[in-house]
Amino acid sequence: MKKIAVIISISLCFLSFDLSKSAIKKINKTIVSLWEDTVIERSTINLTDNQHQAYAIRKNELQTLNNEGKLVGYLYLSRAASRSDIIDYMIIFKPDLSILNVKVLIYREEYGGEVGSKRWLKQFIGKSNGIEMKFGHDIQNISGATISARSMTKSIEQVSKNIQQLQKQGAL
Image (cartoon, rainbow, N blue to C red; front, side):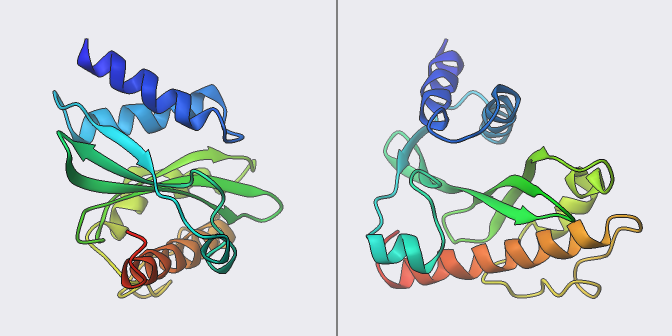
């Protein structure tokens, strides 16, 4: 019953985004899989207008994840460019701001969807502050998905740097 309540509360929060029901379901499923049998509460982090602009963060895209009042992570919803469209994805950070999980929520191209594979995305786990995220060196390319892979890598690197800066500013 607790899982259902958590999923409902998380789902209601994400209805303010332009995300499909399947994307919201992916978010919920990922959170539940990371913290099985645990009630995870999420709260939007209130940023200043300057912070929203400086880091290109839309409202509700950055949230805390808590269990019984204790911080267990941060959820960051973001976007990356693909060849001719946008990739919606999420990053879950640990409290130390290292990456715990990355998940592609919506991929809109006909080709290059391999960037959504667990095998490719696991390269980002444990990394922080954009360190060790050099495309083609630390993060391997995907043949046939070079544009999407390069764009995702650059975007995740920037998000990782941004969240570090927000912590330094006391926003987290």
